Image 1 (cartoon, rainbow, N blue to C red):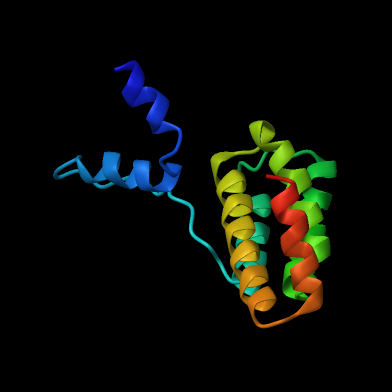
Image 2 (image 1 turned 60 degrees about the vertical axis):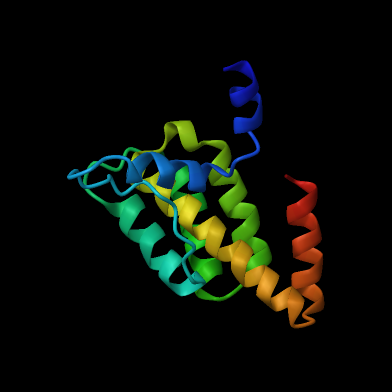
Length: 135
């Protein structure tokens, strides 16, 4: 059992979640799997999550979410990345919907950055390096 658990950390969490959820026959899986969203859609989802009834984020956190939202809408990946990192740091204080919106935005931002870096965009290459350093 210890060997199994020691190897478990190398399995991506998303794959592990899918395996666990697929074993639940006849039950609908909760919508808790992160999805990479394009920046414009991530911007909309952040707005919905942080302005939803029951949203409990402080004004400071809402301002960070708004900065991330605007940066994503304007395709300013560097600013969006910085704001999303700050939101990830306070994730214990976010609702499930707020946290998932942040996670989905980060995944989409990483995908967008990788695609742009692969296409030769020098700013995206620098951001990709920064993202790797922060892992």
